[in-house]
Image 1 (tube, rainbow, N blue to C red):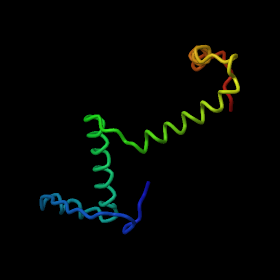
Image 2 (image 1 turned 45 degrees about the vertical axis):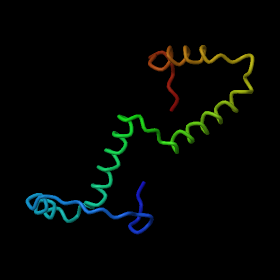
Image 3 (image 1 turned 30 degrees about the vertical axis):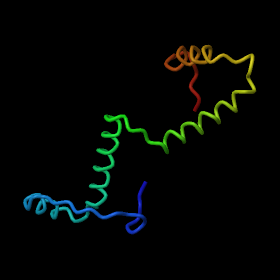
Length: 102
C-alpha cells in the first residue's frame, strides 16, 4: 500500500548520526521516507502482536470473509462435513498421485 505524499500523511522528524546521514546520501535514488515508513510499520505490527493489541480493521475483514464462506457452505447443510474436507485436503495436498491442476 503506497500513499502519495500529502495524502493523509503526518510528519515526524528522525535524527540520525552524521556518519549515517553521509552514508544515506550515497544512495539518492532510494526513497528513504518509504524505507522509514516500512520500518516503522513493521515495528508497530510487531509491538501490536507482542502486546496483544488487535487490529479491528483486520478482524472485521476476517469476519466478513468468514460470513461469506459460511453463506456459501449453507447449501451443503446436512451433507457436508468439515472434518471430511480437512482430511481429504491433508491426504491430497502433497500426494504425488494426485493430479495437479494447471
